[in-house]
Length: 322
Ligand SMILES: [Zn+2]
Image 1 (cartoon, protein in one colour):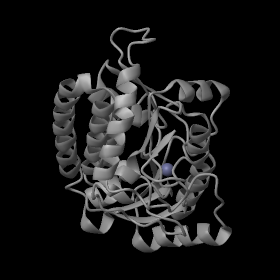
Image 2 (cartoon, rainbow, N blue to C red; image 1 turned 60 degrees about the horizontal axis):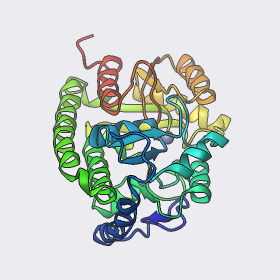
Image 3 (cartoon, rainbow, N blue to C red; image 1 turned 180 degrees about the vertical axis):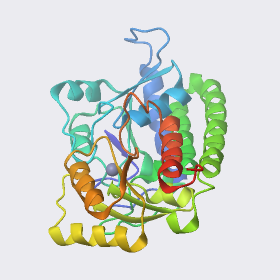
């Protein structure tokens, strides 16, 4: 396995290689992959077998890679990456992958452990968050101990950087696809630029005093930064953790003191969603929903996720005329 760019991937590990070193490293891996292509290809249109952790990363890969780089996610659409445990069929997908994209920064610890134990010796693992940091994006700290908030893709400008890393990685793994990957990236990057502007337009009417997000877990710092909001609180830093009665009481006080009209649950958080629904009931706030880590039948792609969230912030916090 070639783990990039960190080595052990534990929470808070940020000793990433410079991007240039990553690129050189990938050239070596890419040459090995290119030499092996065609030996056992069972689908003429697919050149490399790509696996991702999150479904929304598979969507990004599909936008950049098209049919040449068939992407499959280990997590199903509604799964929570913080607590997801891979199954035996996931192990097979990992072992057969040429390229694996994860997020890293502690987002999906169990999945990365299983990837590390089962990835093929000539396959490439890229941790998108760590590679984006190496490329120069600025991070937001988490509230507790540990490194930066791992949910970097919630800012579409950083999502564009993720797509560029995907383009570069696919190009090195499959040089014959270089032109196709580059052209697809340019189209997708323009879509992400439009999306960033649409998000700002959609939320422009929310009054300054109401530009506050309270959610089920600490996933919205980058979204908030992208649309000039702030995170005012959350039930737990990450799903699977416990909120104490004192923390719940503090959150109710925050909602009441700031006059926050709505709070936001997420489809993949069940226990935390029930807790936040009770908090909202006690504080007299509306319950709305945002997407961060998971997709579903309503929000099927990364771009749909971003647009939904911006429109939901506006709808629930008073920015869409009602
Ligand atoms: Zn999360």
